[in-house]
Image (cartoon, rainbow, N blue to C red; front, side, top):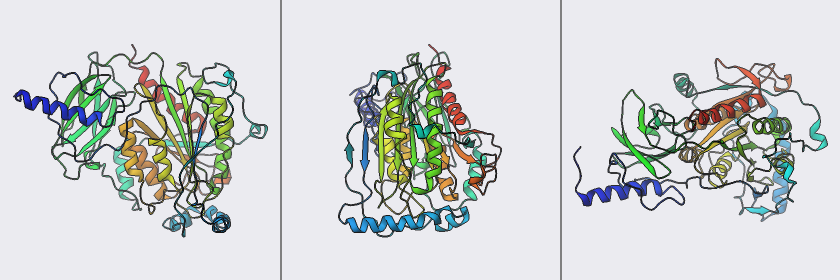
Length: 493
């Protein structure tokens, strides 16, 4: 290796530090000089649009942040818009083909949202309602105790069957935010004993100066898609990886067949896994049936995840969204380990209403989820379960879901899209796009008859998927969570 002069080595190291510390809250001003010497990173042409996860705990009461969907200037116009959307709701129960034909419709004359407001915090619940308790939780209101039919669902992993996913993209010409993922490379970070190093920060920079950021999952892996962030299609990329003050470097050469392997002498993983789990839910009128079922399903999910043999340290969050012109654009509940408060004050009061046109405010809700919630720092498994029956508005301007899915990868957040009844091809495309890029999976509700959601649970779906297994939604989500946590368990101490 040809060594740079001392002055240039200092400049290169300072640039490398800036590249990652610029997206890391509370990061060290300087890193220890690594071995081997890092590549000469330069100031990237595109800056990170996020801060690294940094919260230390979620031992807080359930809090609520709400962004109204109307401007507050004309109450009469708001009532008229709500009446118009109420009349439109039966139309949204039409077949999937009719929804697809309307997918380009826009909200007529909707006013921009006003500033968010923080709603009063609920009264603290008894300590026995905390997730730390080993006792089963039973905080459902009486009306929530009634029996519901099981909700069945299937799942596909588009990263595991990437060829099939690319074929799906090619045969699905729908409006979306384009990010080219056809060329991808697997990054694997391991320690000296060959054990995966999870939640390591990653910076990838092209020779042209464009850069991207990622965090490895609990299994020490991350998928890198150069053309999603580098319009210059550089031939090589410098990769810098760090965790808890230790760092290492590697190089990615376009066209290489093997994975990018980095050895990082990282400390052992915590003995107890940490999980930040967010439910991101479309709360418009057409989701009434799904939300009612979700309340019963999530109660089972939270109870079973909390009772896993590993007894993970769990934080729960909820972000519900509607659309412009509705009572709220989005309503978010930050992370809390108070499962009783989460059920009582966040989940059970959630009601479906509003909507009207087909697309909804998913862009704003995903942005809120990625950037505004108090995601915990090093050593946390971060997951989002997105339940929706419609695509996002692509005509509202920023924020854009593709930019936030890139930020989600940089923060180590995996999105698992759940396609509810009525989700058209555009909605399926975008949910799978976000899930694939962030390392998540696409889940879809199934029915006895694919074209009749009211036909009850079954194995059929209208979605463009093959070779899937079916289970109840609660068991399926618990299995997805268990699989993610198991990756962390493989590292050991």
